[in-house]
Image 1 (tube, helix red, strand yellow):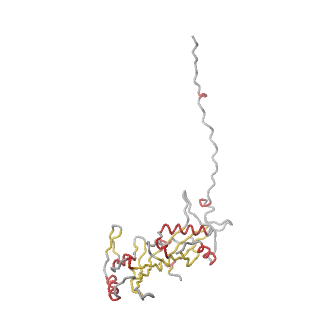
Image 2 (cartoon, rainbow, N blue to C red):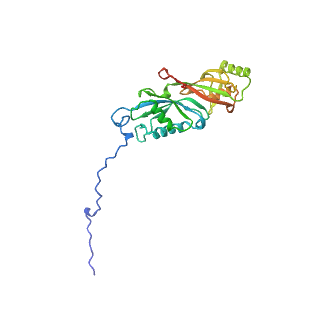
Length: 265
């Protein structure tokens, strides 16, 4: 009879885990490195540039977020060292002053762009950006801004618009409607299911001389503060003028005294 084989258990029989490999030093991308952020290769500080631009043609139907992406592409194509935020998901440091409703044109939009190198905001730089911008985006002005200045959105107080009426009532009737709006104690409106008073948001409303084709025009100055923003389409509705019968263009953004920026031609 075969003898039994006795196997004795011993801790050394267990499979030992593989030794831990030393952790590799991960390379920090330039945009996430606090020492590199905002500095040029020569060790200088970066720059905050403010651009005033026009938004015309087919670009009128481009939304706010897409406009921000357009600026990112424009800066990259121009070969400029765009700065990025810190954190797990760095984002380009681009800041638009105010969203423009779809379908509205403008010749007074403003964007702040941060670069890692201190480049001079001269005509050569403006032309370099313009060459890489899409049709409908015209850069009107380029200037340097103190990096410590408040965010554009926090300084915005009002916006100015010019409206060309394609199918307007006779001038006496239009004048009567404008006076009725201005004399109203309140103008209840509903937006996104909420009721609000439009009247305090209308800072000024007046008739302008007709355009070259003899079409009536209106000038509006509407509040553009956080939580209190007037919209030209709502003013037109209060005047009983459908939006499809008008062409709206933003011509000025009014900020706190530190940044008064209006139309530049």
